[in-house]
Image 1 (cartoon, one colour):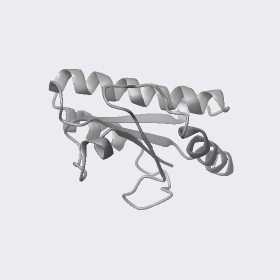
Image 2 (cartoon, helix red, strand yellow):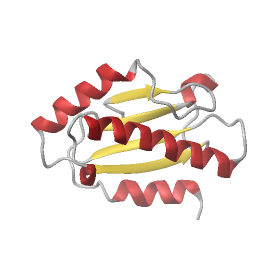
Image 3 (cartoon, one colour):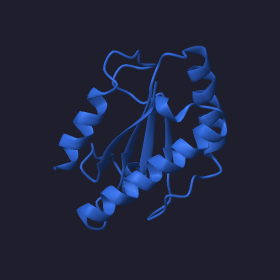
Length: 126
């Protein structure tokens, strides 16, 4: 299944839930090259998302995971999944119910940014 098709299917699961910002991630966490380790700078972003999630208990949290185009497509999809899982575990550690978290995995097929460093990200939308 093509990555963009899978992403569309996963995003469809979140239809009907209110968004914090139209077509834009409410928060974004950037990762180092070839890494799925949650950066220390993510603490504040995760705290903001947790506070928003507590204020809107019926909303789902969509994690859209991306990679830069370096590496093979299958590797980048797996890396994007690991990045989304790292963010999910961070949210769960702060008390978010994992049933509220939905993944949209793009790998390298997502919208490209100006630099590869900006492509290595997980966007978070409520």
